Image 1 (cartoon, one colour):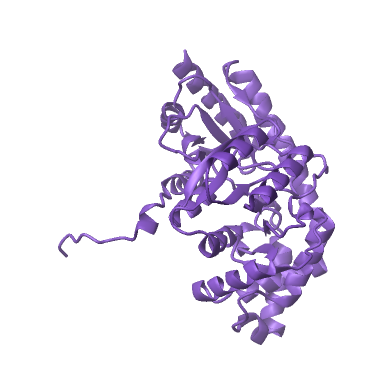
Image 2 (cartoon, helix red, strand yellow):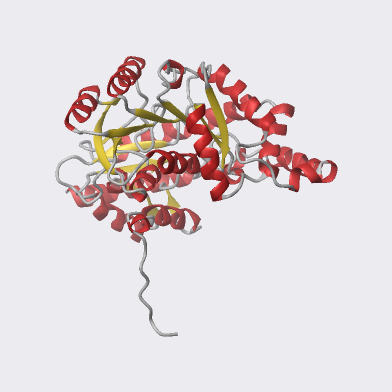
Length: 399
């Protein structure tokens, strides 16, 4: 077949999934110690329980399990999720509604599809989750980065960005154990962030995939729990607290927004698979998901301490790192004018992978001295070996 040139849409040309593909490729290679991914620990998946539920559903309720359903999601699951987050996050959805999505990433895509026009400005934490950045850019949004501080997004930077940019449509934030930094926004900042966005008429996408993975059990109020103005779109998921392969997420938002999201979902995939929706619903009915979450907290707390202890022992003293109180990630910074791509290339030669920081930034074209590490997937001995290899590469590059 002759070579052919295809004319792709501007929308898809704006999306660069290379970084995510590289992460998944590195994570899947058994010869590589991957400190790159964001996967939960597979040994904690409740496989036996979910298998029993799936078998029961297919045997005893095949018509419900295998038939078409409504775009907004299985009604009993929607009710169960609303009850769960009302208890967990003190969310009382006054005038809100819920839609079940195929993971929270699909929810972000629908929010962008329903709310953003070409050229609209979206404020993002700098750095932020690269999947969300790609989603917003795919709809032609202009990203405006607001720097992160040790207790969350800079309120001063947010106010400046709101004052200096006309027509800001959205703020995207991950308040709990942020990806990629692991930082948690303080309660005081949450109130200020909500106040500023309400004053400027800016909607907030509050992404909370990691909130349950607190090491101490301490939780801060969600932005959604403060939402008296109907400006917060709350995204959640069962990927990190049950299993990511089931692809069950949800959006809680003002009913008008959910209505249009349901229309977007109808046009996209009709509805999320009934079998996985029913599996999650039955799991919540039959088992205590809190017990599984506690096992995750205990494991991740120990692995995080192992990783940060190794960083303190083997990284150059000028390299800083966050000390997360939960979640899956540690953010490190070489400082100065270094570019972590050099360190990445050296580590890959020695079969160790991590994620350079540039793809997480609002402007990924700039040199970046920071990088993200993950501690949830590798066994202890590989975390230790990987961190020591990384430490040697850092010392080699930094002198």
